[in-house]
Image 1 (cartoon, protein in one colour):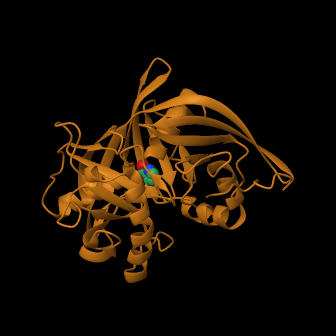
Image 2 (cartoon, helix red, strand yellow):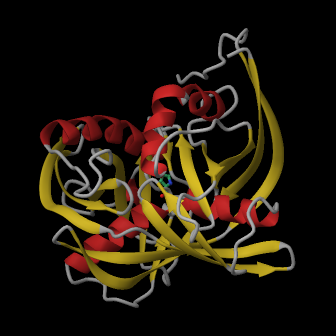
Length: 332
Ligand code: PYC
């Protein structure tokens, strides 16, 4: 490997980091982003761990690499790199990536204000608003999202048996709503939620199997969404989303918001067009909406949209050198 330099632009989406690799990303093989994601994981995962883990990143770090689209009708293709791996889709990552790419002139959409983005999980249609050369908001129309299973049970340390649903919104989410053994996320610290999530995610994936019906490379329950009371009276719901090994999303989580809207819709709690204002652990907000009801491989699904903002805060030239014992990063 020798020494490799990556030109990155750093931003955050509603508090959660997005490090876009604007130069230095590898050439990947594959007919679409799902295949390219597999190639990256096999050959280049050291780039992800080197840029996301300590000492160059941290537990919450998350980023992306831009590629040319596979379909000439689209504007860009994106690989998400995170502490948790390469997610099939990332909502906060999309909002940050599009904000950076437009503000820094890294992509030139054919129709100003609209980006057709290929993600490993599928096509994502994006509308963004610009004020001068700043992007003030990004709204993504996500991949079809659906409730995969309801009323499952897992034993949680300290809390005891917990009932949860699993929904797909670009990743599979175990959604834990308030219930007798879990009165809501506001009663606990981030440390408690992280510790319990580490254990129950393993138990959930040992007990149950979740596989996307159209792409078997998307499988397993990767995220835990703990629900609770909102901070603001005008918000619809609040969450703490656990991902990676130690992260609680600082943003309201775009794929988590999509999964939760699919869950609410399937349970008759949210109708098409109704706003869904989702609060994060730190109180930042995304506005969600069900755009359309669709079917995926015979399953009832929704097309959710999620809108939020991001701020670019820095330019970061990062070197990964073979003679550094922590070239591939580390986690404690
Ligand atoms: O916004 O979809 C999201 C996301 C996934 C993990 C962290 N954020």
